Length: 437
Ligand code: UDX
Image (cartoon, rainbow, N blue to C red; front, side):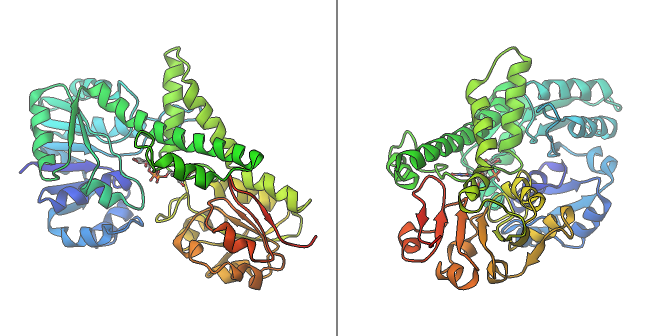
């Protein structure tokens, strides 16, 4: 059994660590955040992710948490790098954390070691990290590098890792390929072996393709609104074609999260840097930026001013099943609502603590959906939480002062809404206007 260390305990690093531990590997998780390490060592899962706390607990004997990278990397056979590559101002990926970890591995490793980059990194990064490792190697060890991109989605990260659609392994030495193949044998998933640059590209090309698919559907949705077609029927009809597939066709208020916004911009930046214009991805980014403001534009049809209006917001996170707010539509819309003088009453089952860190006093946080809706003149739906989708739509009529519902995630059936005295305007579907002016 290989001795494994993992740098970074975010969504990628921690989920990878726990899933490897569940397959019997002994895994040391390294993070710079001492409080987080202490909490994990005490059995607390630092992120909201279905199934992760249970798996962490079940395999705790295979998991060690530490800030002491030297002891973790000293005798590891394999070190995964799973730290963040956040977006820089110009759209490119910030590789500072990856480089720092590489330097720490180089100074600590006392035996030959395969370094596996799981973080999403621009094409060519693995090569430059290998050069850095070799240059800084303090103890005369030999490093090999492998690109092993991550395809997990937040909210289903454990399932996506244990039952991955594919495992991509980019290597340049037979030994590194063997080590990674040995590790992933236990997962029983299809393995795609490639060279390193192709593996790096597979990650970006996959994420950007999905982002493009969403932006495409959002544009079709906008055209549906103009022409009177229904985007959900259109998606249903398209999805039967196996060449298109029925996933990621849901039009809405735009994609958010830690990957699509960052990875589209990073690939676009990389193309530009190489004097190539990635026109499709540029368009996907632009469409998404506009889409995020779609409900605000719609709101102008129903009220000329937001000043003093009581507004309900259902959903703060970028999607259900996570407490992550990164690039969530709520973060673009709520500041605008507040600046316009509206009083915002927000509900989210798990996103409130994170939102509160950014806006401690500017809005009212509600424990129930009913509380958020009570007396509201407008309701914005930003996240399709199951609790929202399961609502009896009559609750809008009962609770709101004037039930004008702007739904960015198409949570409700048009027929159900049609029967009620409401305004219900969603994405790519006909608007229902059953309220007397
Ligand atoms: C994504 C990729 O799916 C994953 O493979 C990669 O490793 C990381 O990025 P994630 O960001 O967790 O995962 O969430 P995902 O479920 O893909 O949704 C991303 C965004 O797209 C969300 O804001 C979601 O609301 C939006 N989306 C998704 C749509 O608007 N329509 C869809 O049909 C699907």
